Image 1 (tube, one colour):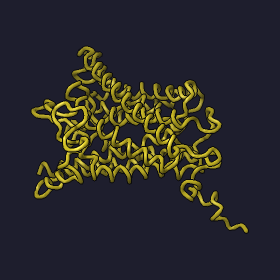
Image 2: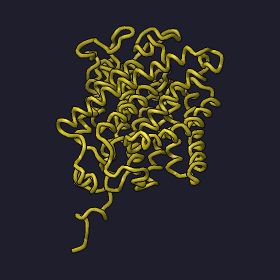
Image 3: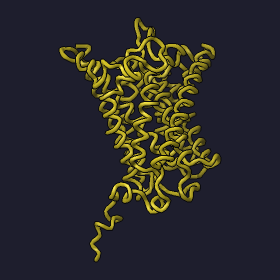
Image 4: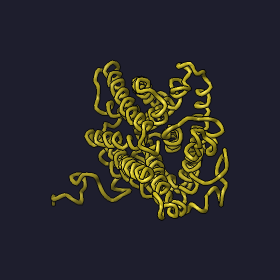
Length: 425
């Protein structure tokens, strides 16, 4: 009965995390121009379809292969694919007459893969071809997400100790409860790479485009926060005290980040904005992801207060450094993921340097961040460059200026802006 309850807990959490991808589509869709919202949302929904398909067929078989201890990339079977897990075969076999735990776990982890790819799309809003994006997403999942997920998530615990698994956790000792490295750092570093490959939008300046639909963005942020409770608490794989700690910290950090972000806006710009509040909440969610089960709620709240200001300052750097990260994926997800992952080494229960445990864990966390950041950036830059030089990744400048929705998808988000729906003669 206990295992069946755990399976149901994972099924519910999986549904919550899957709902985050449409939420991300709303969040990103509201931030872009009205003539680009369909394109922006389609990149999230495209990721849902594409990565979901790949995960079922072979993604799970790579990320959770039965490779031995400390394997850099699993070499069981062919090209790192655990042949017994293709098409979820082993999970399906275990579910026959069993509690279905492995099958629900496979579904839960698949929702992580889906939203991680979708996160990257915010950096190239208004200027990317949909087909090229889908091609990038497919190769990125195979070369970056599936291996890195194996490094972090594919470990075995026996008697409370890690006895086998992905090398960043088993060999290096990185602590990452719900994906600060594999989800946030990897997507943020890859977003930076694509932003550099595609270049700046036409007329790139600070404040060049106001969000076309603020309520849509706020709805998206609310859905993301709602789903994130499943993201973090579900990573315990059981409804117990650790999941409860992850749950409360997924409340504490975002509220702290939301407040500190709008206070920063009030001080720096004299006006606290709703977009700033939403961005602050997301920054807090990003930062608490790796550390949600390792912090006292007070330190989770402090993390939020810090990361809200740090991420608000970080998004200003794109204008100073001259790269066009359209929707601040780098400033929020890369920077927030780094801060949250390193925070464990500073304030993590039993391991934090400021709690008397020394700096050893901080060093391990820094290694994990550096490895994933560099690996994801290099692979993403190479993929983006190859696509741009072959089939082209960026749309023509005339299409970019006019808005890409009608050109790429043959439709507009709002009928009054679509000449095909006009009643005028």
